[in-house]
Image (cartoon, rainbow, N blue to C red):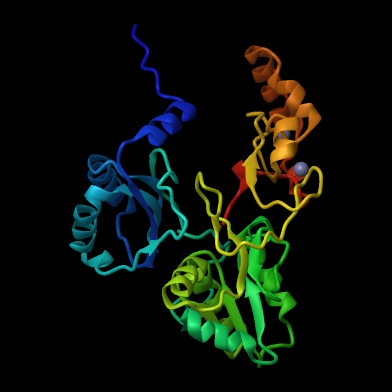
Length: 345
Ligand SMILES: [Zn+2]
Ligand SMILES: [Zn+2]
């Protein structure tokens, strides 16, 4: 019997880096009713495979959330195809600011219950009653006013490497955890001006509706998120009040917005804002590591993991099986220890 061998992640990444053409990295989302997400999934997978598109796309009855890269030459075809579906007509694309096109190396389209896991019941509040959308210029102006509260709606490992000046950055591991946390932090501030932001704006759509439902009167959100903000800042020569890096959920791990480095290497404490996954596949921890430590620990998060990567592969697999059994996921919930497989928006 012939066994079909799938190319490994490494092989796919090599292929991506050797491609002779350019890819454009973009993202988009829309809350729109999709009656049969599974059918749409299959249709999009077929069409987008033909166009050699890579990315991670989520479909649900509530809409679509897509991050992808597209060969430059196929971009127009992709756009025409997508916009011909009236559900996605004129959906705005957010184009990456710092982009080498090496953001994704395969195409994954999944159907889910929700496009953003919020842990809320569908009918618990009116999701269309969102906050006021602010452009980058308006955002800067509002930020300067007294008594304005700026809240980062992303997870802690995202705000760790980049954030708006004076923003409240909850220590949340997921969006689901973040919503009630933010509500509690803001208790008593129902009449004050609140500014919300996230990566591309999708999380703020939910968060603003959630806060309004809970009695907050003046809820505003950054239109198009940090990605669009950075683009506007460049385009219009505005001052960037966002400092550092915008964490992104793809192979690039971040887009640099300003030169400031606001975080530290988790191993030596030197200034650094480069995220990596631990080189030990059985660990795969997402952490911040400087170049010196990367060399010293061979890309591992700890001496333990460094020992493991030098064992024969069979032994490594055995350790993986054993640790999978006895390590409860809560072990990874302290600030430094986040298993990337647990990363949720
Ligand atoms: Zn270091
Ligand atoms: Zn490790």
